[in-house]
Structures are given as C-alpha cells and as structure tokens.
Length: 368
Image (cartoon, rainbow, N blue to C red; front, side, top):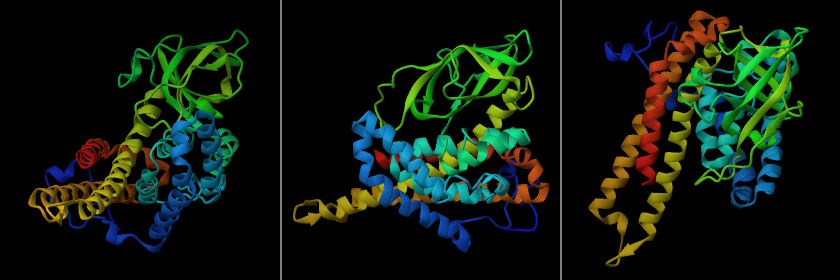
C-alpha cells in the first residue's frame, strides 16, 4: 500500500491525519479473486445446508467437517499459513476479506473463523518447526479441525485467572493436565486443541492436545439462542498426559499467545460484522421495496429511508475503520519483516479492539 507505515505507533490516528489509507477500492486482483471465491463457497456450498445444520446436531457435525475440508481444498483455510506448510502466506487484508465474505454463513462462519484464527495462528506464530510441520499442513487442508481452549467456568476475559493445571510427570516426558474449559467452539469435532494451563499452578502456558488423548472428554452441546450450526461444548481434562514437545511457546509465556492471537481475532471479527451487516442491509432494502402500505412501498416513507441511510452510513464507517487498520498492519509487517508479525499486529491492538466494538454495534443496529 505504501513504502512505510502511516504512523509509527498504534493509536496515531488520534493525533495525526493520514496521508493515505487502504480501502476496498484499492484491493488488487488477488484480494478480489479470493473474496469472490469465499463468497461463492458460502453461497453454493454452505447456505443450502445451513438450515439443516441449525436444527440437526448430527447433520451439523457431518456438514461442518465436510465443508471445512472443502474450504481447505479451495485454499480458504491457509492465507495465514506459510507456504512451506501448505498455506498461502498472504497479507492480512486477505484474511479480512475472507472473514467478511464467510460471515453470511452464520454459525458455520464461527466454526471457520475459530479454526483459521485462534485455532491455527498460535502454532503459526509460536510453534516449533516440528510442531508446524506436524500440524499446519493438516489444519490448512481441513483434514484436521482446531479448537481454542482458554475460557473456563470461572474465568473468561480474565484469562490469567484460569484454574486448569499442568504438572510435569516424574519421568519428565509429559505434562499432566487437569481442569475444565467452557464454551469451546468446534469442540464436538475438533482434532487439535490449543489449551492453556498453569504449570505448578503459576506459570500460564500453552499446550497442543490431540483428540483421543486418554482423559480428554467433552460435555454436552450448549443449548444456545443462536449459532446452533456450530459446536460449543466443555472440554474436560482428567489426568491428560501431554508430551513435553507439545508445549506451545515458552513456559510461563502463554499470555503472549492468548492476547496476541485474540488481537487478530478482534479485527477479523470487525470485518465479519461488516460482511453480515451488508447482508442485513440488502435484505432490508429488498423488504422495503416489497412491503406496501397505502399503496406505496414502505421504501418511499421518510422514516424507512432514514433507517436504510443510517445503516449504510454506519456500515461504511465500520468498513473504512476495518480496512484502514488492516492496511496499517500490513504496512507494519512489511516494514518490520515477517519474523516480527506478532509485534506488528500488537502495535495496533487499540485499533483492533475498537473495530471489534464498532463492527459489533453496527451489526446490532442493522439487525434491529
């Protein structure tokens, strides 16, 4: 987008005017093509079975696994994964347009986003070469599906208050995990779990745990008001032995994984909210033209015009904030080098948080 970052520090938009900013009109052909591929996949593959997924748990499991593999075949699970591990290694604007266009698939978009974001990126950014070689090709292809286990019955946003423990075995070959994780997306069909626990009750650390490990079990599906076409369950650890080579990142530095990966999830959630809000605006406009009162479509009435106009304005603002920030992040990554991607993204943690709140509230307004 430019030869240098627009600002040297995140939050710079508070103090200075930008010389230029990334907008959807600036997308190159690759970004546009991937956006179209994602949308076509959503419309042709997911939407025809989405209602069935919402009302039948077994069908939801079956379709989720099948659709994730299909998405992997089309390269939609790998934009963040390095090429040497079967991914595409593309700029963050690409993952953002994928998030925006998969958003119209409702609950499946939650499955998709949890896997490609918080379920895969911890290994991309913090995994050892051996961990990357073992897990990333299968995650990028959709052969394996990932889940992220941070929240517990007594801790959510306060991640460091987690009670799950990890104790080194006497022979030094395994860590033994005990505890319960709650509200875990993809739990019902995940093959890999990114798990956070405290070694000796103090050192907050990440682990990679595989499905089928003895002592790992699942609670029932949560009875949810929405996103029923995704799996949300407890993940329970009872003396689960995890090989020491499956420690993710540095011992005692799990917070760096959790907090930095969640930053990425925030701006991608903003992009997804923009995509969903656009769908709502389209549906609202269609209805306003079809619904008649006093022999006129209600789109002719001032109050309805005002609602549609405000929706459009807010969506435009959220879209602009999202892609401006993603452009800044891509510039920062280019300036620092790919070995400092995590630091480059962390620089814009303020903007990522704002985008999540703004996008969510715009979508909420549009839906209302």
